[in-house]
Amino acid sequence: ENSPTSQKLSGVMKLTPTKQDLRQLNKLASSIYLFRAMPPHIVDQVCSRLELYGFGDQEPLIKQGQKGEAFFILLDGKVDVIVNKSLFRKGTTLATLEAGNVFGEMSLIMDQPCNANVIAQGGARAFLASRSLFEYLLAENEPFAQTIQEVIMERTVDSSVKSNVKNKNSQSTSSNQQEQNPTKSTELPQASN
Image (cartoon, rainbow, N blue to C red):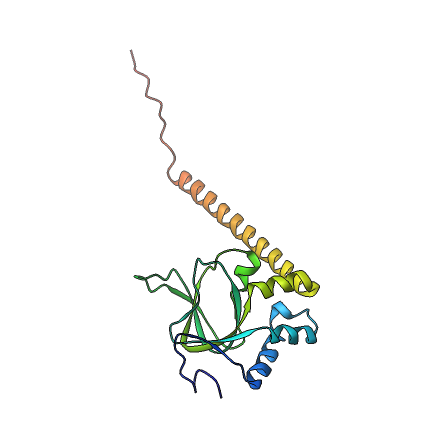
């Protein structure tokens, strides 16, 4: 078998998927929200255009702040999602993803830089869907485009709700502070004659 547990991965390697890998990909892809509205034969066609890569321990699949050029479907192994990692900082681990998880798609969907690092833990294999494949599906596949539109709408609503809550919290915090610390009068007492 061609998996991280039986084959030591180091660096980043383009791999040739086995028939078993492709069967597993088709099974995973059929349950991924991006492909939920697509007919099975189209999902199969999409899967045939994905490329398999192996990532050694601690290899980044995605780097925070970079333009997203692909999204990934994790075939096996584990990856950590880490924010604010730098040369001198460990960063904060937000999640550990396993087989079947998709990541990197939000950067493509929202056309924004990646908001986290995704780093292989102990080796991982993932199928990569390029930006060009994503854009092709967006232009040519109505169910895919509709799903992406729904994701954008949800994300926009989530962002505006969070923004409103944040603004209300900061307004109530400042009004609470004003109630607790009323401003002193700047008027000088009248001099008595």
